[in-house]
Amino acid sequence: MGRISRMGSESFSVLYEHAEVEYQNHEAEQLFLAYASTVHKSQGSEFPVVVMPVLTQHYVMLQRNLLYTGMTRAKKLLILIGSRKALEIAIANNTPQQRISLLEKRIRDWR
Image (cartoon, rainbow, N blue to C red; front, side, top):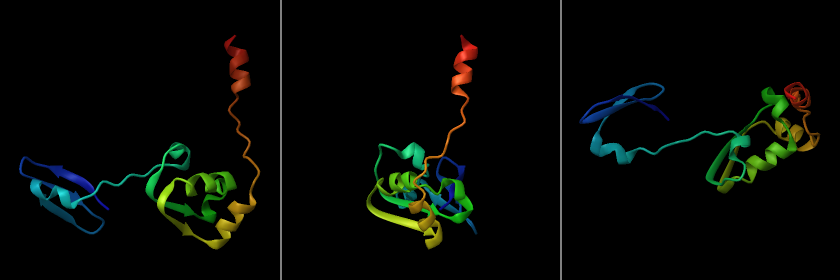
């Protein structure tokens, strides 16, 4: 994966992790767009391939409902990256996280 680093009238450059590659404009069809999104933003959508990190470092996000939502976004292929332990934690965690939005207080103060 890379990022477009320069655009010219006849060519453009893509910066990859270890090199910058110049393409002629007619070679653009060789590249494919890639997108990243959160599980929260993807609700209601489907994608051909979903790559989902499941890591113990993201302990607060290891929840069964988030795992289910992420998994059900994949139409053809789901790739889980992480550890079996993190997956087990997420599956076992069916407790919704309490949101502290102070919404009730804000509504009272607004009146």
